[in-house]
Structures are given as structure tokens and as C-alpha cells.
Image (cartoon, rainbow, N blue to C red; front, side, top):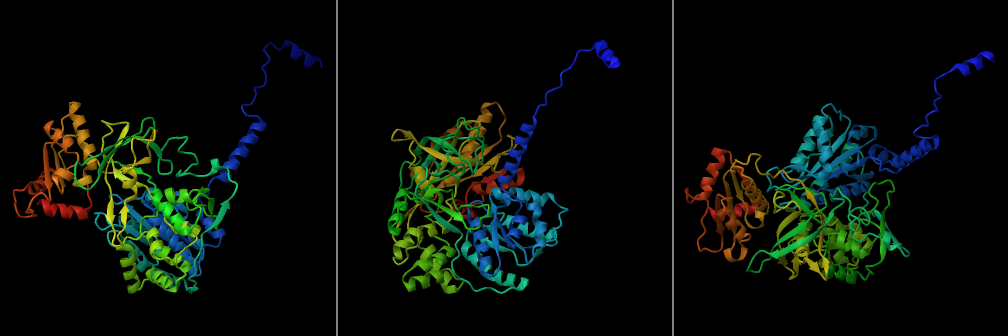
Length: 622
């Protein structure tokens, strides 16, 4: 005791209190609990466990920008059940694609890839990470993977089906086994027919490869079940939001395809002074959104269907459109719980979420045929969904050539009255529409300009069809009954750019609304000149039918030429003259010199039009 007391009394250093830990045991417990709950509730990216635990052996990945690739993937996954297998459609953006090699652990497993090509040979937004993974993983061993690819493209574009071709080639390079030939769908021709023809040969090849027999079950297979909500808090009901509930009321950046920004319309004016067509120029205010864009980028807008069409559908089907419903996936393990945001009303689904104006694909007709009370109607609908020459011809003539949408089909086939919930399950999603931005962020940092022409035509049946997006944009006044009109939008980056060096010459060819991105380019070149920068030659070729009717942005173009922003402005009006000048007739025509310039000087030759239009316009100009 004496020694201890002595040591205590002679110790001269101050006593230091024990430090309080930053996190108490309770804090650590709560933190661990929260992390565990986050991990538990977070969507699982492990598709291998998902399909193996459910006894599935076919997974269909899709790269889709407009929804068609996803639609084809869903059809193939449903087909699997008819061939004695189980499948699922999967968005590669939501899964770990590094697990591909593990599919070999599942007996008779197969990976199908429905890959669309977007823009200048690019992958779709949701397939970008998968594309990067394929490029970066040279050491990946996929020797046990069975696969096949169906590509979706358009032959009028230079890089036709490049994504489908790349995935097919790259998987083989990494050791995977192709069990059926690459299929190529051409949207310039008949994409649906291309898919059906490929699919009809694909499934027998799969059965032969795995030694299985088709079950012969052609009955309708429902993917979702209906739940009607009789006592739902309306604050929990979707009213048109693309992603997060109430996202249009409380806007939070960043803004993208799943979280669009609600931009205010500040300008909506008609561009043409005469004629029966309606060219429009809109300006969208993005102040405070933190959205950035560059000349050449695209703006995506989310249109809605016309209320008159929706009301007609409800009337024909005899349903209360304001009933609150949910369509719940019968596969509880699927990441896709609903075909569109739920709970919602039939009115909202048919207005905001479903495509009711395009001619339905053959699988929709096949599924709906069972609800036709007239046996002849049933027979014709099933025939149109078949791969027989007669069926293809009937579908082409009665549906595609006549531009019959689902409303027109119901009107012309009185015995067909399907349940509205099954119809909503089958109809494809209403997709965003993309427009080349007609402004430069250097000049208009808080505004995005859109140039469009109203799509309006009379069908063979005498109906007047209107383009969903252009009709919707046309009817977006700056103020509507004291309220400002808004447009849900986001930016999609493009590779379509001005040259890095401002001194490089630029030649632009843009007939009609194809001039849109070049208005941004011209604004930017003008801004550079104002900054005292040296700017190379800027040449514009613009064409339309009539000078007095279709010459859009005439004042702006002539002002740009007057201010030397445009070095040359060449215009052509195809129907203002009796005689058309055709290619090769005159070697001194500006078009001939244009080709010489691009060859000799390395000038950027920028075209913004569909190649079909390019051939048409060039044959009239040159």
C-alpha cells in the first residue's frame, strides 16, 4: 500500500480523461443495421442467382433506345415457356455482366441478346456499360456460354446494325458458342417481319441443340395480374411521372431518362408563313436545372397521347378510365415489377405510358385474338401473327399499309373487345422523342431550341393520323389558362460536333427540319467570330419544296450570310421550277465543287437528314 500511495502522490503529470469514442456501441449497431437494410433492399444485380434459384435457363438481354429491343426480348422470354423452358428479359444496365461465364453452370442455359444500334453506330444508353465491359475485358473466358444475337438497325444509316454485329463477334472472340446465326432486323424495311422470320427458325434450332421438344402450347401467357385499388391514397398514385413519384412536383437533379426536367415553354411560333404544313420553333427554359448541352446534342421529350383518343378507347371498351389499378408481375423475383409506374389509373396509363397510335405488332394481335367473338376475326388475327406468306401479306396490307392503330382495329373489328388490363399489358411503352437541338449553349445557355414539323396524314381508311409528339408540341402555348406550359425533357449527348479547330471549314447540308442542328452550329460560329476568333469557311446548303412555304429560318440564314458568319448560302426549291436539275448534268454545279472540297481540304461535311431524303433532295438539286 505504501508503495502504491507513494507512487500516486509523487506523480506530477496531470490526469487525462479517457477519450469518448466517436461512435458508441449503440451508434455502431444502428449504423450496421442501416447498412444491412440498404443492402437487403437494394436491387440485386446478380442475375445468375436469380435465374438459377427459379429454375430458369434462358435470359434475354436487351439494348433498347425506343423500346422495340425490350419488346422483342419480352416476347422471346415468353416464347421459352412454349418450348418447355423458362426465361426472363433483363436490362444489362441493371445487372453485373461479369457473371455471364457462370451461366454455363446451369443446364441447357442460353443467353439471347436483342441489341439495337443508335445514332452513328453507338450502343443504346442502357447497353453502354455492357459495350464498355466487352471492350475492356480481353481476358474474360466465356467458353461455356451458349448465345445468339438479334440486331435491330436501319439500312439507311452508315453503321447498319453495328452493335448487334459487334456483340455477336465479340462474344465469339471471348470463347462463347453461337448456337444460331446472327439475325439482322431492318427498320427501313419491315423490322417485325425480319424478327418473326428469324424467330421461327431460331426456336427449332434451340430445341435441336438442347434435345428438347416444343410443348405445342400456343395459349396466351399473362405476365402481370390486375389489382384494383378501391381505397387508395391519391398522393401515392402516379399521374404521369416517369420514375420517382411526385418527381414533377419536387424536381431534383441530375436529370435523365428516368428523371426528366420539367422545362417551361417560353416560345412556340410557327416558322412558315404559308402552305398547309406547320413548321414550329419552340424554346424551353432550363434555368436552374444545372443541365448542360453542346451544339449537336439531342433533346428528348416525353409526349402524351391525345385525350380524345384515350376517351374513345375507354368508350369502346366500356371501362371507367379513372379506376386506380396496379399490374403486378407474376414473377415475384423479376426486377421489373410493373409494365409502367403503378399504382395509376387507366387514363394515366393510356395517356402517358402506353403507345396507342402506332400499328400494333403481330404478337399483340395474336394475344388479343382470343377475345374476338367472331371466329372469322379470330382466324384473321392469328393468321396475321403467323409467318405464312398469306399472313404476312394480310398484316402488311390491313395493319401497316392502312396505318391502323389499336383504336382503328377495335373500331373496324366490332367483335374484338379485350379486357383493358390485358390490352395495357400488351401495348408497348410510349417512348421519348428525340430532336436535334437548334441552338448553341454559348449563345443560349439557359434555353434549348426545337425545330419540328407537324406530322399529319390521311390513311387508306380515311382517318386523319397525327404524330404524337409534334401534335403535342404544337399545342403547347406559352401560357394555358394562366398556367405556363411545360415539357418533360432531358439531354442525350451526341457525337455530332463542330470541328475542334474553329479555323476548319464546315459544309452543312440540311433540307427541311434537317437544318435544326446547323442553326446551333451557325450560332456558335457567329459567337466565336464575336470573340475575335478566326473562323474557317462555313457553307450551308438548304433545300425545301417552295420558297414561300417551306423556307424556314430564312431571316436568320440571310442575316448570318450578311454578317459573314455563313461564307456561302446555297438554297434550292424543288417545286418552284419547271425543270429539275439532276446529278451529273453540270460539272460546274456547286455540288460538284462541294465534293472536290471535301476530298482536297479535309473539310467537315455534315449532313442531317435521313439517307432516303438525301437521295431524293440530291437528285433534285444536282
